[in-house]
Length: 254
Image 1 (tube, rainbow, N blue to C red):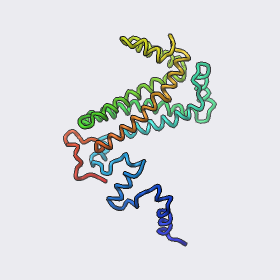
Image 2 (image 1 turned 45 degrees about the horizontal axis):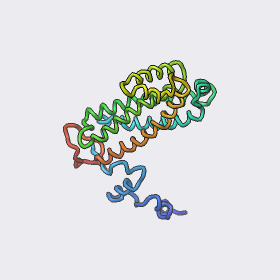
Image 3 (image 1 turned 90 degrees about the horizontal axis):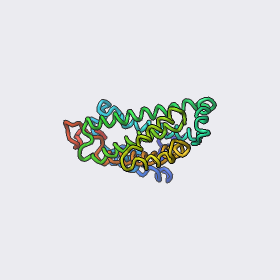
Image 4 (image 1 turned 180 degrees about the vertical axis):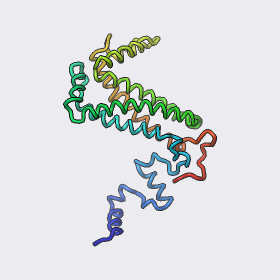
C-alpha cells in the first residue's frame, strides 16, 4: 500500500497539478512569496502585513464584513431574479408569492434586505474608521475617493432596490425622491425624466430602476471593489495608526 508521502508526490508532481500550482510547497520564504504572487485568489494580499493590522480593535473587520455582505447580496439577488418580473402587473404579486409559495422565499428575501441595510451601516462605519486612523491621507487619497464612490453606489443600490416590490411605501418613497431630484438647478428635470421615464412614477420607472439595480450600478460596484482591494495591496496594505508611519515595521508578519 503506498504511503502518504508517495501519494502526495504522485498528486503534486504530475503535469495537471504543476500547470495550476507553479511553485513548490510554501516551506521557504521564496515559495511563500510565489504562493501568493502566482495565485489569482491570493495575489491581492501582500506577502507581508503590519502586525498592528492583525488586531481586531484596529479595523473591526468592517471592510471584510462589507465585502461579505456584498457577496450575500449578489447570491441572494441572483436567486430572487428567478422569481421576479419587473412589471407593474406582476411585481407586487411576485413578491407575495415569493414569501408564501416559494421554499425559503421569505428567508432569501429577508437575507437580501437585511444584508443591504447592514452594508449601508458597515460601509459608513468603515469610512469613519479609515478617516479616524488617517487612512485617507497621502499616499492613499485615490483609494479614499474610490471608497467614497463605493459608499455612494451602496446608497444608490439600496434606493433603486426600494422600488422593486412595487408596494405603496416603495412607490411614494421613489416618487418623493425623484421629485426632489427634479428640483436640482439646471439638470434636475432632465435627471428626473431619465430615472422615471415619464411624467409620473409608473412602468417605465420600475423597469429603469430594475436595470439600474441589477446591472448599471452593480457592475461599477464590482469593478470599484476590485480597484479598491488592488490599491490597498499597492499602497502597502492597511494604513498605520496616526502616531506611526506607513513604513513596514521590522515586526511584519509573513
